[in-house]
Image (tube, rainbow, N blue to C red):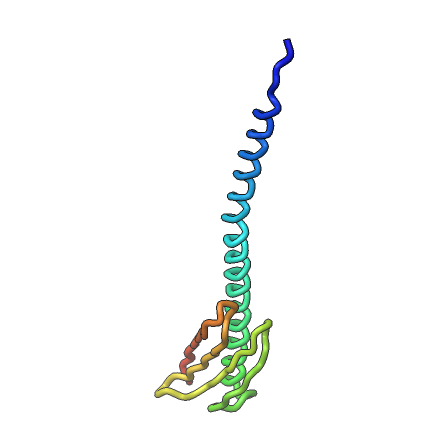
Length: 112
């Protein structure tokens, strides 16, 4: 008549909790990594865009070269440098990303 299934319900709850916590331990570090990579991508695009704009300023003569300066176009401070290499003007930006690794991006322009 009456079934005793209290142990079965407890077993189901323990298994469901175990699955939930195991999924959380896999997803939280993954979401953290995705957030850092997104931050790095946005930072790289903004610094490269600022480097491009400043390189154009050097080409038209509003910014002197060779020059070195540090600015913060997004959240990380980036060091910009412009030097003449033969017929090319080389503009480089160097910064430390969210993973504490140094990144460098260089753009070149032909002097006419």
